[in-house]
Length: 181
Image 1 (cartoon, rainbow, N blue to C red):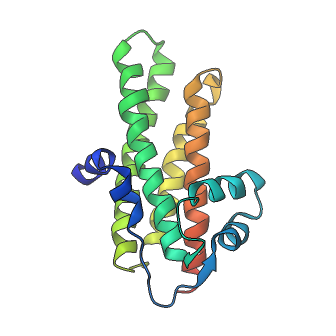
Image 2: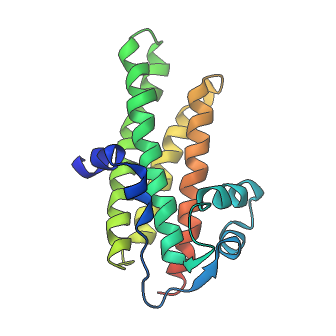
């Protein structure tokens, strides 16, 4: 949990500039990595390009996946601090809505801790648990998203959809690594 909170507080220039050049991981142009990993969803392809805009045009796919993972970590923490905590603290939501938002907070914490674990593994080029943990992150954010279905009128719903999309971009980029291992 400490690492998750720390990741939110560390300046993004430190957080995002350290890539990882792992052996047996392909080097690709950013556009090619986005196309190959996110070709089934045009909005994910665009999000992939936006996410990797500050990365070198050509790099190891592990660097791209790490960048997307770290951005997701920051987004999850931001959601808890700036959106979910204030919503829950207001105390004026109906019971069912409060339960859905509380579930999101729990799921975002879980997803943040898992993504921290994945990022730590990527830095050391250990991909042994990444596929399972990305799946668990997808399930956590998906649980939040699904629980908000009756509350699509809330701005929170769109934020969670955007975070779910970023989660999927990180997962799809990492999928390029997992195919090599």
